[in-house]
Amino acid sequence: MVWKLPNTHLPLACLLVGCFTFLPYLASAAPLPVATRPTHFDITADPGDRLTATIYFWNGTDAELPVHMESEDIRAQDEEGHVAGEAEDAVNSLKSWVKPIQPDVVVSPKQTIALDFTIEVPANAEPGSH
Image 1 (cartoon, rainbow, N blue to C red):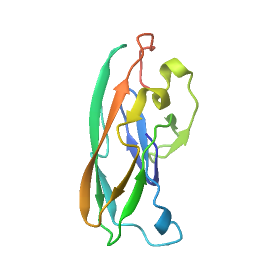
Image 2: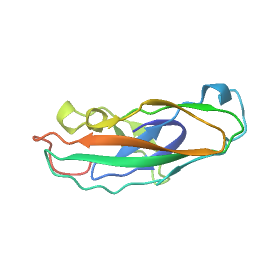
Image 3: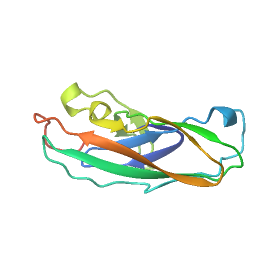
């Protein structure tokens, strides 16, 4: 999954990243008081499996935050944990496997919400980490 601010890594036996977009705060230079947990997943799945998982998002600001969640294929870029976007063929693409249940939500100030998503591994998926 891709979160656009902040970047969060979620290794999976398929690798996930997340992406939140906070439009009202993009002009602000100060870091936002937000958090996600868990910060990383280790999930093992077999071809044909359908799994569900949850990430919790905390809005520590004093304003409502619109949150958009989507999937993206990534690869490790360096030893620091940075990632880069990378296209995969559809059968091995987390972008096509991972679907948020509610891709767009508004999180109230000082609230924690559960963001559920599904992972549908195709029956012909290749073994390995994705």
